[in-house]
Length: 172
Image (cartoon, rainbow, N blue to C red; front, side):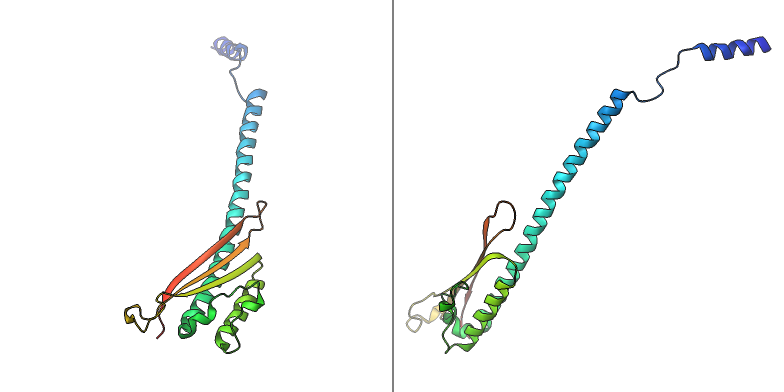
């Protein structure tokens, strides 16, 4: 019995060992695949960061545009006073006889200057939809108001972007 057992042990010890682990080539292939995956992940991280910056800029611009549009709607009886506003040209501010529109211009210009948007410029166009509302009361003396804000992005491409808000409003 003892001899049989020792023979079995000898057989086990003398048998060639099976493949018991990774070879050097398999390890290198696994490392290359891991490196490619990590490089792809790093690239996606950069793209995600740039898109996040774009979204943040768009949110700021939308809030600034909406602010002026609401100010014009609040003062819609004097909407024509806002026509031709250009935040990069102080000569386009509303006249002193329109204190509310002039104050709105100043506040909007300050918001743009403090927004940290490169080359931010705001333009306002107000057009009466009917040149003679007394002859045609159906139009309700409506105005088409367009507020445009343009700026240059801060990324490597330095693209010029703009956001346009438009509304039709009638005085009370």
